[in-house]
Image 1 (tube, rainbow, N blue to C red):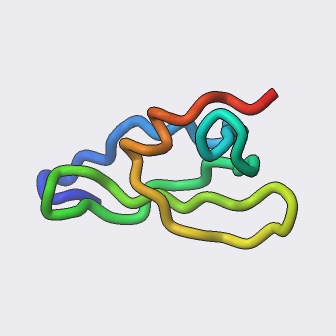
Image 2 (tube, rainbow, N blue to C red):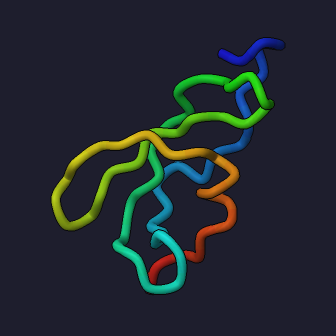
Image 3 (cartoon, rainbow, N blue to C red):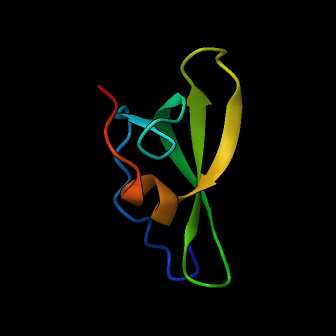
Length: 66
């Protein structure tokens, strides 16, 4: 949980891409709050199944995959 115990809204299950033309990934769960107020979120790469950590602000900025 975050510093205040409030987990932000995370689009769990959404398929997005890294930028307009990047690889697709599935949004997983919020992992931890960062000191700057952002959150780290687990994502899973669609092609490989590899899991990675990614900032929630970047997730929110990335487009939904087509």
